[in-house]
Image (cartoon, rainbow, N blue to C red):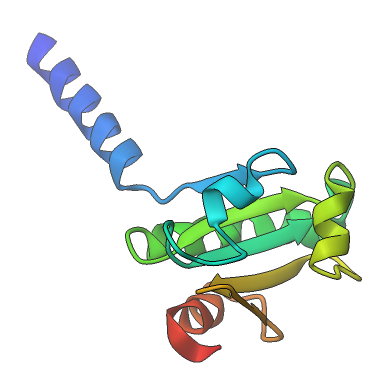
Length: 128
């Protein structure tokens, strides 16, 4: 019985390491993590700007988690709670929720496609 526990623990650990992570961004860490102004050090970022009360945002959350899994190791994936971080909402001219933006080498690209994982991943991989 004990070896089965080790197999289970190893599997759970592997899943945790293999799964993509959506990084919570805010006013205090956004520029440090994304280097959005220059793109110099942290690579490309796909960022979802959302509001916790937004039904479309909540519906999109499992899709966005899937996007993070699909883009792991290629593109950083983050999210910003705009009502709690109004400065970022203003900076990126957020007018509605959810809004997806791709940040690469100091440039920002708007996503205007369908809210499907494959479409979002295609955009982030160079369809911008």
